[in-house]
Length: 289
Image (tube, rainbow, N blue to C red; front, side):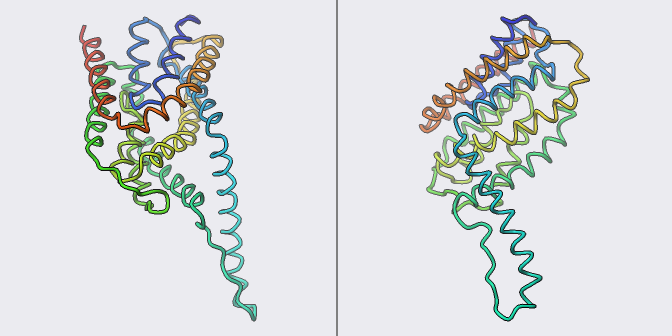
């Protein structure tokens, strides 16, 4: 893989990661068209993810800092309540327990944590299959068909006014499970989380924000998992192409997030469904040719 190919793949990653159109499906297709070796190289994939992660951290840093602050507060209050539980019987006056999930941001943080549980479980269960299918255009094409179907079905859902206060932990668990299946080639992680959020009756604003913030720990987890297996890569990719791909995906991703937030706030699910259907057909034709 040369630097120009790495830059083009970084561009593809930066553009497609933040729209419900499957970055993995596009990387497989474009990499095949370019004839670039190493597009499934674990180190290169990790660096592309690093780039998009940096763009999310840059755009959503205020929300992420708030979530980390609330998470630390939840841990502090949890230990305070545990200490109080064992010391209260010995006191004359009863000291009230602290409310761990008080406030919408604490509830939001707890929902994200719950979503991560099924995401990790599903991703671990399907990882051997995903590893075998990565880079396969037929698998990517079929995955894009599934993405298109989900987007099309969710476009008929009447979105209600449910936000973090009305959300249940079961909803978060279901969203996390959907996201776990986004690991399959051609399945868009963002499409999975958005569609499941809409099907749960959440507002578009809450669903979009939830999907983007849930991506942060998910991408970090994927990077750590893929990085731990990087010794198994069969096609060597140089350091410079890896850094180039990361830099391009980070810069492009920064601008694409802002555009995506505007586009996704409107009802464009059917447009993305049609697009995924077309790219899926192209991928399968590319596999069969």
